[in-house]
Amino acid sequence: MLINIYLGNHTAYDFLRMQDILAPIAAGLVEAGHSVKYDLKRFAPAPAINLLVEFFQPAFVQELRAFKQASGERLRFGILGTEDMEDASVMANPKQPWRRANFEALLPLADFAWTLLPNLDWYGRFLPEDRIGFLRYGHCRSLREPAPVAAKDIDCLLYGTSGPYRQRVVDALRARGRTVFVSECALPDYLRRDAVGRSRLILDLRRNEGVRFCSPSRICYGLHSGTAVVSERFDGSALGELYAYCQSPEPAAFVDHVDALLNGDTDALAAEALERFAARTSMRANLQALMPR
Image 1 (cartoon, rainbow, N blue to C red):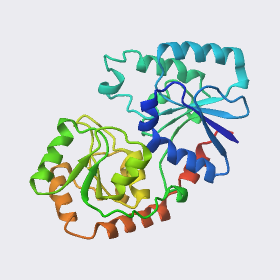
Image 2: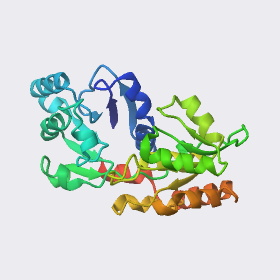
Image 3: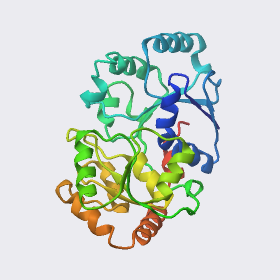
Image 4: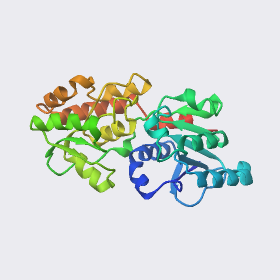
């Protein structure tokens, strides 16, 4: 089966931000025997499946609805949801007042929807149960990063923007003499690999106290990179299964825990975590279970 990951509804900067999300999906599909390509201009005709990542501006919604009406069963597409639909900072952002409504408008037209977060009840308002699925991230052998050649001269990597909540942790670690590199943006792959390869720990911190879910893509990338991940333990949902492959202190103990880890062998922690992740999970199997027939 050909899966066409269509990205024409996104900007060039979005392509950078989505690499951690899409790379495991593409790799898992290939390992499951499917063919995968990315396209910025054209949908692939049936029997191929087009996979769209949620973010639909008004003009795109109109174009896709008209194209689907004209194409009928010759156009098969699914939507990948990456956000918490109850997170007002995203879905009620005054800069994008159309975002949630546009998602809701397109969902009933989709052949299926996958969500990276366990919020299936919300998707069930728009699609029947057999057309929605929670996509768990798992191990993919082809995603394993080569051993870094540069010295590990960074204690902690915070991959993403800081913001007040994360900055408090960064400042506390720096006050203890620890080096913390904050990317403040999505990095192209060669810069990201350099930063990750030079880091002893990757920090997974929520944006603010209102966030309900940890970051499966960040944790998954860290595990495959061979760098130990320290993930703030606050997520009580099914995503919390990923804490089995991370160091996962409670928020109040986060800085102390990271500081203590840096006194030990972080490479051994990373190797042990990746071994468990590979033994217990499979991105290939997770995707194969969700693929529409």
